[in-house]
Image (cartoon, rainbow, N blue to C red; front, top):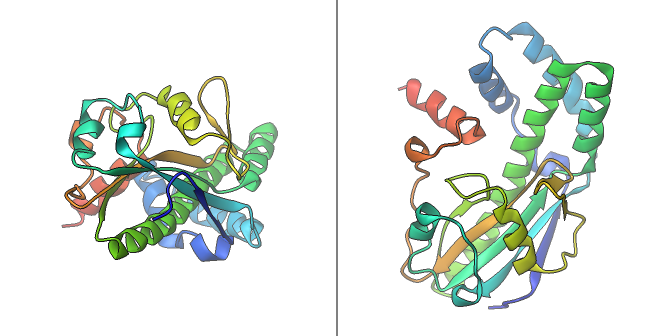
Length: 227
């Protein structure tokens, strides 16, 4: 097992693009009256993203006792028994920053909202792939992994980004942190994954999370209502 080395990955948009139905599900759960306009704008935006090769991310494995993060009690509980922590970052690429800037400048706010949603789903799908690779690599070592957790979610303060980036050190991929703890490019994620022989992969506990705007909360609620 290689620790303290950043493992990086690159993806094309075609490898990680969200399905049309996934995008519809998130957007229509946020605005059930969007209907025809949502579908037509999705169809307009998706071809603009074809060929986007700026999707990249990765993780660095460190011994758990060497990592000092104020994640809060909820995530600390999820990390119980972790021998290592995988500190990760991932971005959907600068293309989303440019696209959102253009749409907002033009006053096309619905297009901006939809592009933002596609970017969020894209970066999460890229991170799903990275997490799956991590799980397989750890399985060879006889270890398991937890779910992933990010600053700004599960009651971990967004300001925790500073500590997290400090712990990762200089990154070999183009993701930076602003003074307000937002990442650039804007459609990026960061966080931690616990690794150990005796940890459990717990489901996300959206019912006790204070973030009411979370993409996953909307998806989980919609899926629950389908049964």
